[in-house]
Amino acid sequence: MSRLIYFHTKDSLERVSLNPELFSKELKKAIRNLLPYEMEHLKNWLLFYTDSKPELKKCISLICE
Image 1 (cartoon, rainbow, N blue to C red):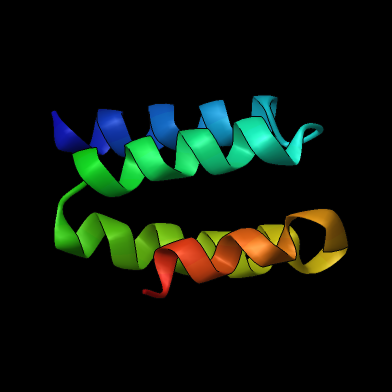
Image 2: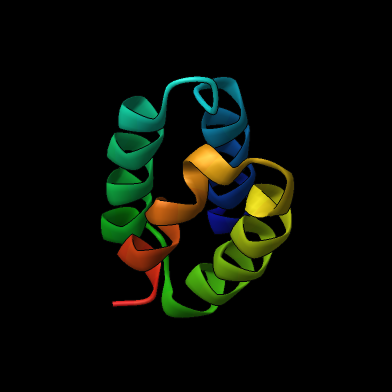
């Protein structure tokens, strides 16, 4: 079940990636809802995903705190 939450979170982040404010808001929700091992997967995905999106790079600090 929790894998579904992880994939839903990833999809939501991709959908709002054009707006950095919404992206940050969704990322904060993910931090509250995901399990620690899922957060590690999300962190890896986020590093890869934001590599080509410099406007989202500042959001990485939210997950690395």
